[in-house]
Length: 309
Image (cartoon, rainbow, N blue to C red):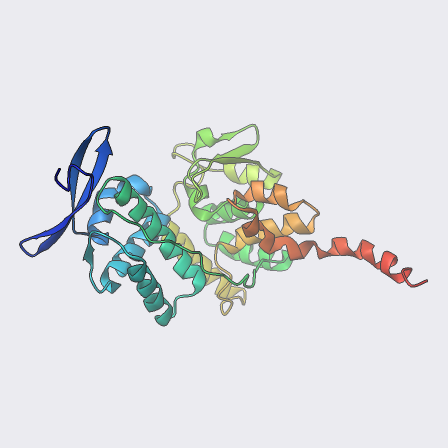
């Protein structure tokens, strides 16, 4: 009986290109599948459009994969080993990448490798462990900051102003609002189909968020589809400088999502409902806002004050 018939893999070299044999047993018969060297760049060319939808997230993933391809000592491989992964993480850390940034890059890498493994292009996968992230500081706007910034934006573009009102009252991500279509609005609710988590969600609209939507141009595909994201960001940064927030690097459009979440928690909404509103995949993501509900602890004081009496 040959090694192939026995279901035992053998490795061999054809020319200068290493190839690895992988056996798959089916009943009493075995077949030999040859796994040739590939690369992250080649895998992304094949599977990038399948795994990620077009948009800002895919743009970031494209940069992540190409960066990691260039950092690998041996960019072509048939097996992505644990040593390769550990070395890559070490290089990223030496380049100043935070744990949060490394986690995002590893998430993209893991997704791509798992697809390649499923398709039989690589025959083993390393173990991915999430790096510990610090909670960090969450910036949100107070009422005066929101008013001043929104008025400055309104003086430049009514469409940009409508978008800001919608973002702060719905908690939507910028990309979710820009991808909103008229059919996604019904019964004073907005449904976001294209989300970061891949899971759709619906949220009710405040009066001013509803008006922001209704004042959109019905001749366009959606209430905010006429807005170019890069031009909006340029206007945002110019206006925040105008109102004295130019040096605050945390005041980016995403601060409106933080502001929405913070107001919900401060208003007494429980964390689970806030998680559903924001569309967070895990409760731990929403727990970043939990400290804002610390006023609920005030009821503990009378208990402690009479404890020693």
